[in-house]
Length: 161
Image 1: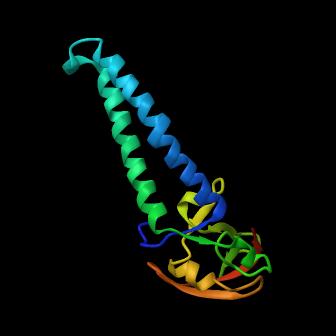
Image 2: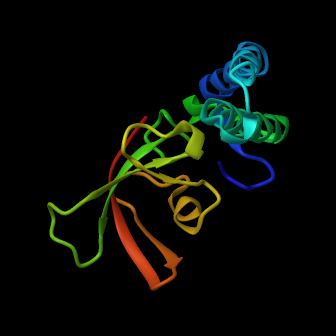
């Protein structure tokens, strides 16, 4: 999850996260409560592995609920159709070739929120230096951005959604 105050999410991701939150706060809490009650019935809680596992699961679930509530409360829903013209924007999958690399040596990125990750693609936040440098550019453009190791230059080889 991004710690930015206003995460940008696509409508599909926003709806999926709303559904996940609803499921966790209803079915999830009921199932965890039942698991804790069943484990409690087994006796001594100090040496009851089932009880401790259920309590641990409850803690993780409640943490995810709080995370989703914070994210959805401040999220901005963005329209990915705006990037359908071949420019880099939220929801774009891009291929970059860094200056000095072989022509066949490229790297793919997804521009968006970590919650929207697609497969194994590295996620680039639109607010990051690379994300800001890429915004609005098209195939063939060379972008430059500040990285921890210095300034990097990369050519946009491909833009997709």
